[in-house]
Image 1 (spheres, protein in one colour):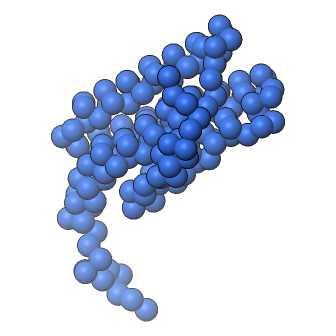
Image 2: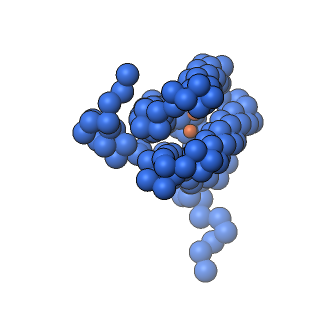
Length: 151
Ligand SMILES: [Fe+2]
Ligand SMILES: [Fe+2]
């Protein structure tokens, strides 16, 4: 059981950047919607909480699908392992959503799980496919080639 101690704040503050703008933007949005779980007006209103949870589910699934599509297109060798990491996170999220039906939902615990999972997963797993894709792209589009010539 997670607690709402200081540890949560420090984990939530660690939000690594991949330097792959299209995915950093998706991560930024995920953190933003995760933080809505802690907004007092959302916590006090079951329907508002459910709307935030629906949006978290959509945004997370869209992000995972986007990454998996990108990895497949670039034939990333670690695709299968990465996909199972995503699936494990999906099933943890489903467990939290089930708690809403039984009245045991804990917004702080879900926020802690989502923010720490995303930070760790970005640092360890996402950075691997990002390095691969950057290398593949650099074989084609290389800043040292200066094309088109600068005006
Ligand atoms: Fe990601
Ligand atoms: Fe990922």
